[in-house]
Length: 362
Ligand SMILES: *Cc1c(COP(=O)(O)O)cnc(C)c1O
Image 1 (cartoon, protein in one colour):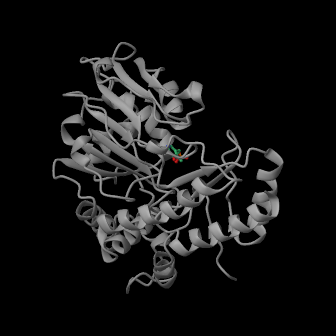
Image 2 (cartoon, protein in one colour; image 1 turned 135 degrees about the vertical axis):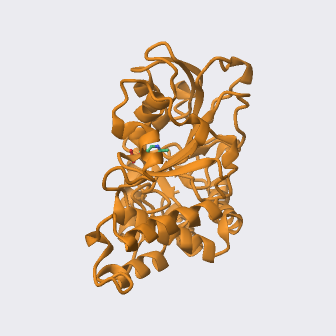
C-alpha cells in the first residue's frame, strides 16, 4: 500500500523513519523479548526509555534546568483546566489574563472561568480569528497569576510571532501545533505545553514544561492526579503513564536530533510553507484568508470563495492522494497541515495539483 500525503491537523503524519523504527522494535524491544506496549512501566528497560525521551527533549529544545518535563494524559484540553487549578492563587477570585486568538484559546478561557477571575485582554473572535489580535501589554493585570496564549492556532492557520511582555507574571502557552517546528526560548514561559498528536507522537501524551517555582501551589480542590507537583515528584510515574506514546515521542526527538535539530527544522519548515503561500498569493482561484504577518508555518488555510468548489477540490485531492485537506468543520474551506513529518515534495506536488485544478475551474 502506497503511503499518501496526509495533511491532517491531528493526529497527523509521523516521520517515516520513526514509524519504521517503531515497527522494527514493535514485537520485541531491544533484547527484552517483549513489546513496549507490554512492559511494566516500573521496569528498568522502560525507565530507560522514558529517561532517554526526557533527556533528548531537553537537549533538543533546549529545556532549561529549572524546568520539569512532564508526560501527562488527558490531551491538550485537560490543560485548559489543569493550568488554572495549579496556578490561580485563589478559587474564584484568583486572576488570569487570556488572549483569545482562536477556538482552542476560547475553550481554555471558558474552562478557566469556572475557577477564577478571567480577563480577555484581546480577541479576534469577531474577525473570525483571521489574525492574532493586537494587545496592549499595559492591559495585563500586574496582580494576575498568569497570562495565557495559544502560540499557533491550528484551525485558523495563525501564529504569534512576538510574545506579550508580562513582566513578573508567568506566561503560559499552548504549543500543541507548533512545538518542535522551530527553536523556542522556553525560559520566556512559566508553562509551555503541547498535546503530542500534531507534531510529536500518536495521541495519548501531553508534554508539559513547567518552571519549578510554579509547582506546589495548586488550589485545594485540585484532584491529586491533576496537581503538577504529584507528577513532578514521581517523574510522571505517579500512575501508569502513556507508555507507548512516550516511547514514540522519544523516537521523534531522536529523529529531530539526528536531522540537525530545531534550527535546521525551522529552515525546512519555512521553505515548505513558502512553497504553498507563494502559490496562494499568485493564484486567482485560491486565497489564504489570514493576515500575512500572522501566517502559521504549520497549518495553511485556503478557500476558493465557493463552498461547492471547495468541496469538489477536497474530493479530487483525496482521489489524487492528498488526504485530510478539508478545513475544520467550524470554518470550512481547506487546510493543509504541514508539520515536521510532511516532506517538501508533498507540498510541491500539492501545489502542482492545485494549479491544474485552478486551470480547470478558473
Ligand atoms: C489539537 C489542539 C488542542 C486540543 O488537543 P486535544 O489533545 O485533542 O485535547 C488544543 N490546542 C491546540 C493548539 C491544538 O492544536
